[in-house]
Image (cartoon, rainbow, N blue to C red; front, side, top):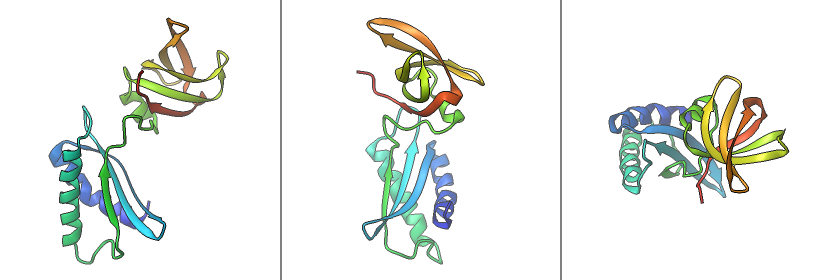
Length: 157
């Protein structure tokens, strides 16, 4: 992590704790000659625009009060939700998604498919179980965790 991300995370955590929000991610990137400090927050039930505005105001104020300035260059502060189809980046995030509708892409075929979408039913140390719709019938599939290339929450249509 960069020094800016570390500093912002340290300043941000008490603010989020006070409001019962979770930190999903922080990144500080340069795009087209402009710097962006992006903060992704979450909470059970999801984040609203008012939640984002509240955290943006409080974080911005705390950063502005710091001396020396932890981010001396001009930047844009962007506070948002990680999104309805946020990635599930590790085992802890995967565990939190039990009973959610998810999309998984696999490194190799499992029962002749490399992509599944369905309700995440359970997991153990080696596998996850998804309930998915196969030609109008709901079926369970056991997928080895080591086979998962990417996983994310998904919107069920």
